[in-house]
Image 1 (cartoon, rainbow, N blue to C red):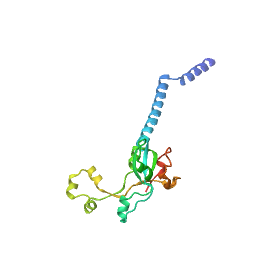
Image 2: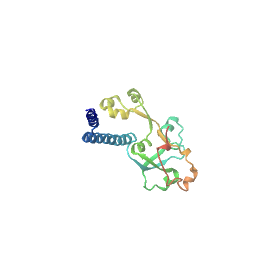
Image 3: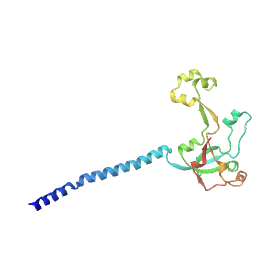
Length: 195
C-alpha cells in the first residue's frame, strides 16, 4: 500500500510539469513578435530622429571670410570660412571657378541635415518687432494663418547656422587652386558644428 501511494505521488508530480505545446508555441511566437516590433520600431525611430536615410552629397565650402563694413550686414550676408554655400547630390560636375575658389567635400548626410547645413541662423520676432522692422504690416498679419506667420516672424542674424570645421582638416587652402585635397574621402556630420 505504501508503495502504491509513492507511485501515485510520482504520477501527480509528473502531471504538475506537463508541457502544453500550444501555450509554449504561443509564448515563443509572442516573444518573437515583441522582439521584431522592438527592432523594426527602433529602426523607424532612429531613421525619424536622424532625418531618414543617409546619402552622399557634395558640399561647396567657403575657404576664407568675406567682409562687410557694416557689422550687422557682415553677419547676415557674408560667408565665413567653413560656411557651406551649396549642397547637392554627388557626381555632378563643378565649374572650374568653383573648383579653384571653394573646398568641395563629399559628406554623408540625411536630407534634413543637408537642408540644415545651408540654413541661415535666425531669431524669432514678435509681431511688434516685425512691424517695426518693416518685415510685415498689421493688415498682412490679420490675413495670414499661423504657419505662414511663423515663417515670416523671423530675422536672419548669421549667414549660416552651421559650419564645417575646416581648421581641423589637414590641407593648405592655397593649394585648392591646383587640386581639391579630398576628392575621394567621404566625411559625415562629425565635421559640422553649430555656430
